[in-house]
Image (cartoon, rainbow, N blue to C red; front, side, top):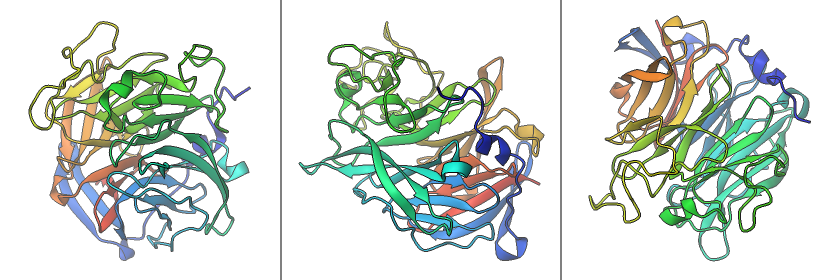
Amino acid sequence: MLRKTLLATLGASVVLSFATPASAVQTQQVKSEEGTLEVTTVVKGLEHPWAVAFLPDQQGMLVTERSGNLRLVSPEGQLSAPLSGVPKVWARGQGGLLDVALSPDFKQDRTVYLSYAEAGEDGKAGTAVGRGQLSQDLKTLNGFDVIFRQQPKLSTGNHFGSRLVFDREGYLFITLGENNDRPTAQDLDKLQGKIVRLYPDGKVPEDNPFVGQENVRPEIWAYGIRNPQGAALNPRNGTLWENEHGPKGGDELNIIERGKNYGWPLATHGDNYSGAPIPEAQGKTVDGTLGPYHVWQVSPGLSGMAFYDNDRFKAWQHNVFIGALVSKNLIRLQFKDDKVVHEERLLGELDERIRDVRQGPDGYLYVLTDEGDGSLYKVGLK
């Protein structure tokens, strides 16, 4: 049985210190509603970075680059050479090396999970997830093994997803885009436009909602998803939250529930990029589907997500932070009675596409920018 408690590694991480020496980096001050932000450049020179994960015991951070490199950033801001043992990725369009996550038992098993675009036999690609063991010298992923493949492979370069989230019981959730093939999000015999739930080794839990149904993929936990590039576990109650790109308008924030249909492309708040209606759309809400928890009528281009749950900056307690690629800022959401009551846009001064945001073990936010000369920033209130 999977454990019913929070993972030891994650639980311990909140007491670790992760700091960047002021002498090694540049810090700028930016105004915000809750006070002055200090934005510190941890490292520059990243090639379209996609995700960041914190190693325990102040060993640094793992950062993925979409071109296919996994890099180590030391606590002092030094960038390593690419690690060896990383799988070959399909680096075209939006595809490449995507998310990175540590095993819940990383201190014992040193397992690192990666999601990435994987080539098919017909020139198309799909999302894959695998895992390997990080060497003690932090230079190699040993024994990398693929545990999941999105089937069929339909992407010509668009809408791969994908984020990796472990829940409190140790199940692995993977968010999957619909490869810009809209109807597949409603097809339960395909893994496009889905959120899947697996054991850490890739096996399917018997209590998944569609297990045993004919012509239905047993991995599916929820469906009707477009292009989910942000996901995080709510630390207050353990629920899985997901954000996704709408078409032209209609970016969504969703709370993911077992077996639910989130509507795409039948229900949407957006239109095609041409301005024409989505052909399959029946309205903003459709019977039998679950509407978004929160929606942006003008699309910020959501990517990455972090719940703030640390005492360092009390003004941010229980806020949600989401990166924005199109509007080039960091979105801060405030809640009251489980409703979004306020939104603030931060870091617009950087004028950079924000791909990922995570809360570090030191209570600061860490932000990745999706640029050819991308940066990792450390962000906190002065």
